Length: 485
Image (cartoon, rainbow, N blue to C red; front, top):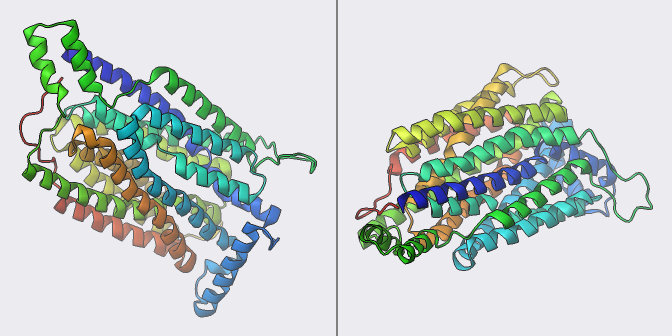
């Protein structure tokens, strides 16, 4: 029985990994293209006050003029309309994360009620819809609609964590969650480079007679759509329902073999994995609240600084799409290597592996942000200093450790029947940070310049890492002995 459950769980984890990898590749294709996509829309319709983009840019320009009148020393704002795209990009990124914050608890509860597989397939349908709209987003309004649908449909990461929590136990949970991190790392390695590659294949409409106008960099959108269709077909064919994974395997084992040994092992699995008393529940709830708050605080600063990175390299160093892809690819490659080696080894060696990795990741993030702050002091248009790559290394370590280890800690502090809800609430807390972070970071960047922006981020993440080490226990309080399959 033990061998059967473990092997079946590993098979499902591999299916989840492949599906999530395709999803992350599709998601990251747009990242290096966003600054120049906004520039393209600005060239098409930015001067037309009757369009949504023209109206937004006019309001931002008025705000910039007001700020410059009171802060004439702001060198960044002296670039004029070029600086406005940074703030617009921040608003767009925050809108996506805000929608994710709204939908994450809904997806979590739907997964607990209707099943993981069905909920995931609905999310995939939404992902395909938004990508089709992106392909034909000839106007900024269409592109904005696509991003709204994307924000309300992206539940793959959350559901992947939930499924892996279903098919693993506390001794293998961290290794299972690491697969999510590896999928992210590989996706962020290849996705931006793929986006930059397809950006050199423009298929924008040449004729005004076309019923549909293609979006800027529509070739990249077409490839992203192909990845999502392949992912949907693969998951539909391969992924089973896992909500009652252990209970169903235990029942089938009892039916197939009434032997004493198997029955003794299988019977406890018909109950929730964590049989906890009131005191333990209270302690775990307190730990979960602290994890939610720290997740929000960390992603508020990390996501904001991460979001502005491509705008910094575009504005300060005039990076091309290929150079943007190379920078993001470096972060992804490094994160992949760390996930596959160092992170998995530390998880296996120490009972406190998750907490230690989160603390180290946050510390490296703070150091990386300080490096980027130093780099941002360079001369406009010059080659970036080595500290830009030092900052990218800090981002890579943080990406390899913090969020996936926090997910593991949350899943270990929940019972089987509420895993989807708890992980949904945890993701929602993080998405609030992701919603507000880009607006905050882009506003500080816009008002005070990039060096001050990243210095603030470095100090804040350092403080959050200290709070995490001080307030969060290494392991959740679990009463009784967990029955392993």
